[in-house]
Image: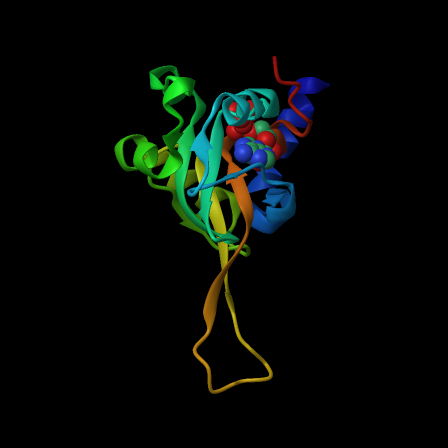
Length: 159
Ligand code: ADP
């Protein structure tokens, strides 16, 4: 029965869209580029349990980089290293996908490399000021795991 569910999931996931499985921005654990890697912040990052932490500048929807938790082994909390200088050395680029892109598309993006997390970004038009240029807004993040969960048709219980 499990194999059958996976087969059906494998057939259906391709037509689903990114926004249906993404983690919405409000639920994303992130840090500011103006933070310092103090003992407290590092403890908070470990406690979050996530392996990748988006880094924002000023506004939470302005994500400028990605901190890989495993890179924190290079950090001495006593130094209170600014996230900014850490990111310049270790920061990784992020894929960007649209909310209405298909999961099949998104999976192909992940296969091209540069990591298995993408920013979900949309274009926003200001209805009250149609003369203004549209801006980008970040809606959330999506990872390979979100897609695999769809393929398997079940939540993955993380070890
Ligand atoms: P991890 O390796 O950190 O466990 P996964 O890629 O396995 O992350 O994703 C597990 C779930 O957690 C997915 O639903 C993903 O969207 C979500 N997720 C990943 N990183 C974060 C984060 N920094 N904040 C909030 N949710 C996240």
